[in-house]
Amino acid sequence: ATVIAGRLAAHPAVERVRYPGFSGVVSFDVADARAVETRTRLILNATSLGGERSTIESRHRWEGDRVPVGLLRLSVGLEDAGQLWADLEQALASQP
Image (cartoon, rainbow, N blue to C red; front, side, top):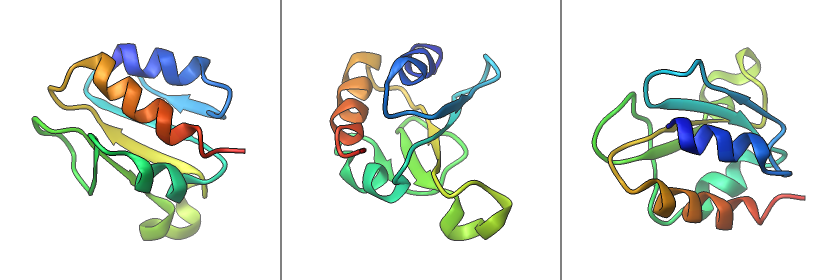
């Protein structure tokens, strides 16, 4: 999760990263959260608070104005960080 959070923070399509430095949950903001979450191939688009498989979801759909429109929550599983980053990078390519 730390590796992925660092790479997300450096990506031009990512507006903000929220990662306290522990656990496997990383939140980040993009212009079009739905586009990113539906374009991942390795990372499952589903609700999860942790597990061996990585998941991603946009929270605004479920929580409305309580969270930013572009917020994505990524729960990093046990997959290789390079493979996870490749999946995220191709999904982020959809961003303006």
